[in-house]
Image (spheres, rainbow, N blue to C red):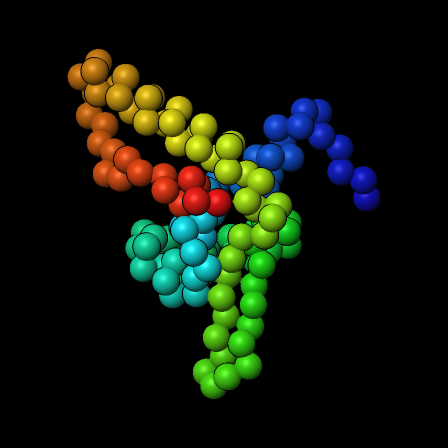
Length: 124
């Protein structure tokens, strides 16, 4: 069945939308990682959701999964060239979010930004 999009941004959001996919991509922008390493950097995500998000990103060609033949099996995730092409979008989204949080703080609203760095995006 043919997928129909009314606007190109629909495809972008379908691929990188959600709370965890951009964070996964930022972490993989720094280096290739195993699932356990990603989980340590994202303690709030459940293992089930992390696995689902990794599978979706792999199916969309944004990340690759390399399986090393050893006991126990070692699986490493890394960005593909297609994934690296998202760098500009993700950096701009981060900057926009930081500005949004700053504006809300200036208006006296209770917002906190724990990590102001998006180095993973910059290294893509």
